[in-house]
Amino acid sequence: MMKSDLKARPVYHQNRNAIEAHLTIVFAALAISKNIEMQTGVSIKQFIKTIRPLRSAEVKIKNELVLIEPDIPKHVQNMLKKLSSGH
Image 1: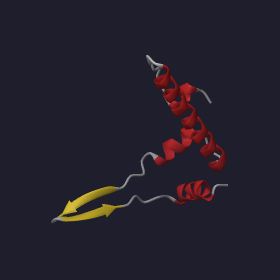
Image 2: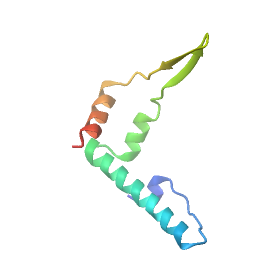
Image 3: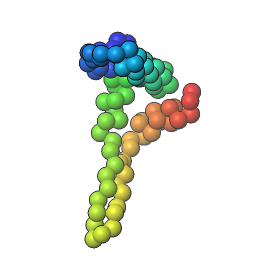
């Protein structure tokens, strides 16, 4: 995987702390995405494409806040279980 796979743009920092912070974030994102790939068995690109449409919403109806949960397909539930189990 490359930095470009994470959609990270070049960042021009002026001091050492900012440069090190940026590199820390990039490497953390790389480690997390690699972990997701290993646990789910799908590429990070496919994982993001699969879960991106899943969103919840809060709707206010007559001064009552209602939470609308997404309908998560079974194959996505299985993929998310693999992440939560840590294996």
